[in-house]
Length: 240
Image (cartoon, rainbow, N blue to C red; front, side):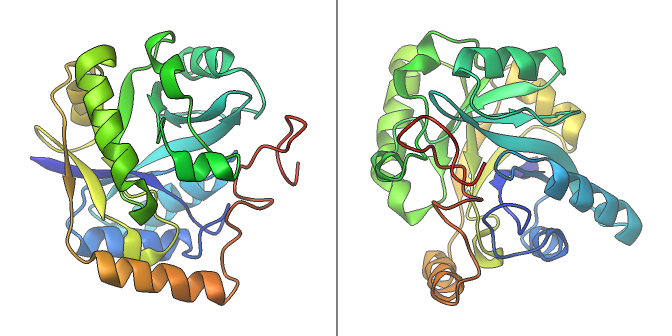
């Protein structure tokens, strides 16, 4: 069985760990695949993919992007080009599909992230052509929202369920993950298509929380700021 963390941020947006640190942590956590999903850029993912090849690491890198749409955040997996922010969620999903990628509704019911204009698309999930939904987000703030999302998906949306750490520090990589038959990107895509994925969580929440607080207090993260993908009150993206 493969084990993938499909929602990781780096220093290319609002994370405190660079792509190399993320890859080494992923290897040590037993992950065979990671999706580097910085806010509104794929540069961190491209850098990670180059490093993984150069270092000959047994970790596949999916080029991904967490896009700030006009309706909330949408995750694109298996991208070829960056997707500009502030399109509607529907147009963003269409653009992801035009690139041959998969569209994922991340943290769709997060009340915490909505406070900072970084929330998900909520019930738009059932109206748009999403390929999967993140039912387990590894952030400590998202546990109640995870329960709601999982119940909603099993009752209404019925999409493939994914887990992602939403890591902004190296300690958080692998805190939530997706398990699927086989290993590698091709089999992961197939598993998502056939809804053959399941989610999991790792122990070590306290270490991840401690690492988060240290990085935040040291000013090494730009959460909810210019690189964090937050929408402004006027509908723009902070810092863009």
